[in-house]
Amino acid sequence: MSFWKNKKVLITGGAGFIGSYLTGLLVEAGAKVTVADNLKRGTKSRIKNILNDISLKTVDLCDAENCLNVCRGQEVVLNLAAKVTGIEYNRFNMADMFESNMKLQMNVLHAAWLRKAKRFLQVSTACIYPHDAKVPTPESEGERISPEPTNEGYGFAKLMGEKLAQYYAREKKMHVVIGRPFNAYGPKDHFDETTSHVIPAIMKRILDGDDPVTIWGTGNQSRVFVHAKDVAWGMMLIAEKAPVAQPINIGHDKEVTIKELFQVICQVVGKYPKPFYDTSKPDGYPRRAADTTLLKKYTGFTPSISLKEGVKEMYESVV
Image 1 (cartoon, rainbow, N blue to C red):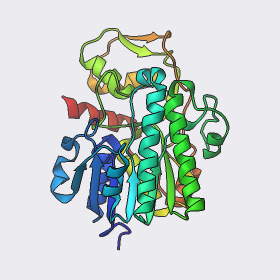
Image 2 (cartoon, rainbow, N blue to C red; image 1 turned 90 degrees about the vertical axis):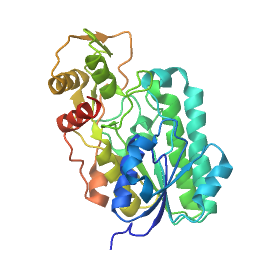
Image 3 (tube, helix red, strand yellow; image 1 turned 135 degrees about the horizontal axis):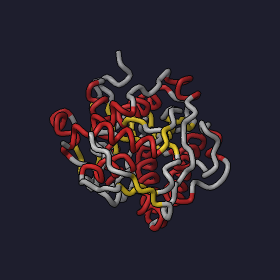
Image 4 (cartoon, rainbow, N blue to C red; image 1 turned 180 degrees about the vertical axis):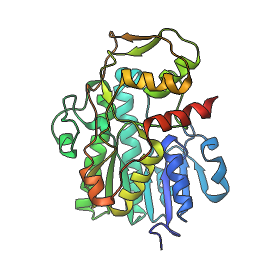
């Protein structure tokens, strides 16, 4: 029998970008799923095909009482609730990014402990890693110095969330596991210019007819892009199989430069405008790729959806 069969599972942020994929996977696995989401960035449309199979609670999880209510009776709590924006907002609103994400982590974790949840997934981020992290990046790099400067408020909040989860595991004997996803993308991503990630931002500019297409930085910075469904699979497996309080990367090591990414998107869309690399804007991390030794060791999982396949899915979802 599946680990998840008939389990009472709460997913905070379960109507969000990655959360909606995880919600669908857990319904397929036979879990009894409750989604708690304020529906500001999350949307019912992302989970419209399974609304009759879940319980949806529209709540603000920055309110501790709401967290206590939604955690009541849950066996597993998967905490995906977060304030996530684009690099422009992150750079100039670090206090908000830190404070909002700390509340969402502290409130949900404490409520899950009070309600005696048997297992808790703390979702962190690769943004906790420093600017000069080793590539591919092992989890140990998160213990070294400050997160990359453009994401510092968000990165520090997530790192402190990890620490709090580890303290709960050690001092309160709570079964807490920790996942660090790398750059997620996919058809359910946000295309809002002010908060979107790099793939939807570039795709939107090409589809809007921009020529040249403005791209932040030199274009030489590299990333690994992980389809949100693969990220959700990784979270699900970590929640089931990972050792207590061990941070585990969810990603891969197939680096792509932003220049190469631009070419992939052009090929999929069938338009070939010129790029304009705005070097007055930051590159962010010079390189980013995941060391997946621990992910493979504990779950046997490797993300499998190719970048071109995922970008094609995104394009087909908006045309």
